[in-house]
Amino acid sequence: MDAKKERSVSRLREEIAMFEPILEVLKLDPGEMGNLQAFIIEDILNNHRRVIDCVENDKPFLASQFTNPVEVLTAVDIPWYFHVAHQFMAGGSGGSPHTEEDLEEMDKMGIPPDCCTLLKLLLYYQAAGLLPIPTAYLALTEPCDGVAGMHAAFMNHPDWRNVPVFCPDPPYHSDDRAVEYYAGEMKRMVEFIDKHTGKTLDTGRLKEVVEETNKGYALWMEYNELRRSVPTPHSYIMPMSCFYLVNDMGAGDPAKTRWYQDMVANAEARVRENRPEVPNQKIRLFWYDIQPMFFGELVPWLEQEWGAVIAMDMISYCPYELIDTSSEDAMFKGLAKRAFLHPPMVHQGRGLAANVIHDITRIVKDYRIDCVVFPGHMGHKDMAASASIMREACRDLGVPFLHIGMDICDKRYTTVEEIKDRMSHFFTAMGLG
Image 1 (cartoon, one colour):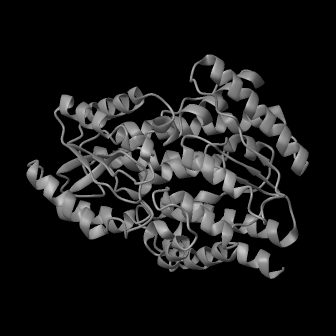
Image 2: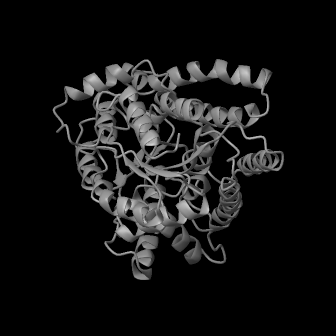
Image 3: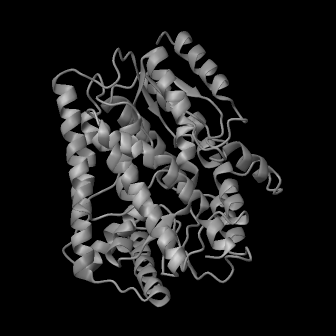
């Protein structure tokens, strides 16, 4: 394999080497949660190996954005990776040896400093040759101008200029006509995949995959209901995995459905026996934004120092709906609605401010929330424009609201210690601690 290809999979190889020993330990002594955690790690590593195999042996594979329906990709039986996942693998645990180096190199690229760091990092990974160059790329241009700008820059890089790209065209409105239009875009995506990879879609296989995924989503909804319990059953790690499992690395796998069943069973047992994973819970917190890469440095402190648990978060609370599988058109309409209207960030950023008010109102009431924390990621200018609306909604609900102001990728913007200090003052001032 030539040097360029080897570099493109070097981070995948490093993550395999990093997580394999952890996986071995979990399998030797899983404890109560180890089997659930091991399944997630194994899924990540298996997908890394599939992509590496494709690069090494010139097999077709895709790069895709997190909104594009994984059911289609699974049904056509082609490997893929979500390139934004790079930022949230090893970096998410605070364990990546490259985070500081990557941010410093990113700064040298001359991208305006007010641009979302999540997008700037992705552009750095591309420029540094750290992303496997796929057979074809399934892109995204919503919900913000930053994503559209990143897309334009991405497709003009010399290494990617000749990669065929399909970008679904998101209409402005969210009515039935818009969903019908986007369903047509999903069908065009299937034609694009067929043209550039030779992989064809069998409608019967798609129905099998969607019906299996529906089971997983139904169990995820059931699990979210269990999170309404006081105390909440789990720490922050496993609830975040619910989104990952069917949105990032595949769908339609009965083994993943069993994982959801095991998650629900574990949560039910903890609620029934009043045996939460985090003892002495005092503050039920709603984290209304995506989680930072360094969440592993912040949330254990919240749990241990303040007894503050994240009873619900924006990523976990995707308003997904189960998909009608009675016909091909019904399936594509359901997949389009899920991709176009419901993903986190897209749901909040491209639609009406009423979406934000509804989320906060519903979650505060249903989950008996003590305070709402809006991290205020510097790149989420669409949500920043709604911060005063969030504050007003919380005032009407009688629940304290904290707007931090931070960068979910870069601790230099607001350090972990500064975030802890602001949250500590907030808890004390609001009488929560």
